[in-house]
Image 1 (cartoon, rainbow, N blue to C red):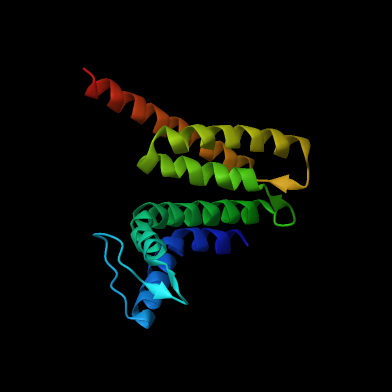
Image 2 (cartoon, rainbow, N blue to C red):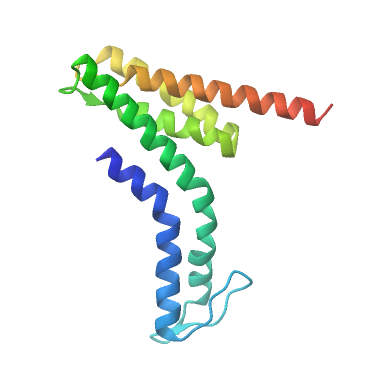
Length: 162
């Protein structure tokens, strides 16, 4: 299920572009990134909505790389768990969120790093208390990647304001 969620996350902006393009083409309307154009469907102008959906495609510059990083991290975590014989325990969702958010810190700085570290910390505490959960390694990796992302951000800001 986590694979499906990460794949949807990665391609969602592109799906929005395809949907907006299909609606604009079916209604004979113009669609571009320059501005919203009138598009009347069932007597309602949805040009602004189509424009928003179309421009959302730019988010794929963020979601595709981070989605791929999340898929790689999840695959590595599952392979490690399988090698340890932990396949009957459920992967803690916050551990996965931690590694994905921390990986996003490459693109969005502390907005990904800080929540990634917090989610990793909370996930490790939950995993320690609940023997049916696994993913402490994923949570630790999320905390490490988030910490590194935050350190790089702080270093870059210090160099910028020098």
